[in-house]
Image (cartoon, rainbow, N blue to C red):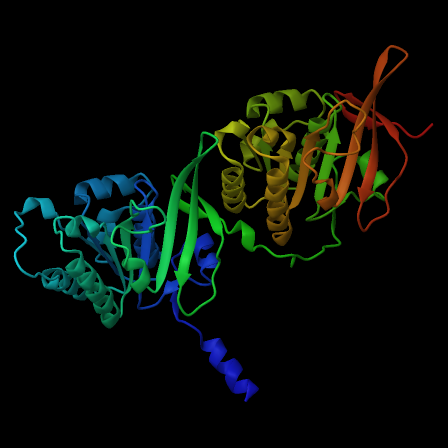
Length: 478
């Protein structure tokens, strides 16, 4: 009996992948196969782009033809807008993988007399689907057709007929609709979300004068799915969705080591350096050498032939390369070879979750062995400490799952509280190096010690060190 129950559970709802990594993970595999999905949101929220991505990915990645029917844009405008994201709709149309049909209600004179139905629309759709043997269908902006009519009961009846007809046709479809004006409403007519099998809501909002985009699956019949809000970005490559709240503590614990980039510092970790895939925090007041240690590590990663991505929140890439060259870390050659990528932005450019999503996309595209964030404390300008901590926990988990070694620098205040970080992330770090500086005989002296390093033997003494043009020189304990 138990085996039969488990077999039935394994069958589940048939789904079709959208080709969008984040969306497919949130939905547990994609959209319901052979059923309509409602994609709603306000103007400029990304509905048309996400819907067209569904068709383009279907044609290119899954060899599934599609139909795009729009009531909003001309074919020329649609082709031009999507070309900016790298979508060559003309080529896809000419090869017979996608067909685009445009219906403009404003081109005809409409008189509302008696009853009406969508028989003409069904006929056009039927021809288009049969012409390319479409498996995927998008109907974009259908409310523009309904806007010329006033009888809501008939509109609702025809919407139900449309959803039923699409199911009978056996195509996996997306229907985009504008968000309703009433508080809490998803659509204008208030019935579409109840008859659709899957409802996805896109939101474009302002938070602290920073624009953010969020995606939420309102419902998905017959299957489990992510229920939180997920940030997404619209970039020159299309839409990127990062399911940041779905990550679990299921990452492995490698025993392989990676060098810190400094032989003397390696010695303090038993002569082997950090664990590969671990998270390392270097904290200290201004001028203690945090960025110098980070650059030393970046150089070592690239010297070994691996890639490293360096997220900088204070200096430009050119400044970092110039300044670190004076400390013995020549990064210019690695940058030219494509082993080192320095991405320098002001924190205020994006919101916290948008930063996280942007970094995720670049990490996924660049495929580095190591990631550096310098300094993470600058993000205090755009978020509360708890929000920043939660953001970095999500990033730590993502990096660990992909076995990427992460090094973070953090500025601490010169108030005697160096053994803490205001963001409060030291507790989730695998290794924590604390840097200090103090005056001795009219000379400022730097020192470092290892606060913790989980799972390995490490030195517990305080060591003075100097930053020279030949690198960082750590002095033995006197």
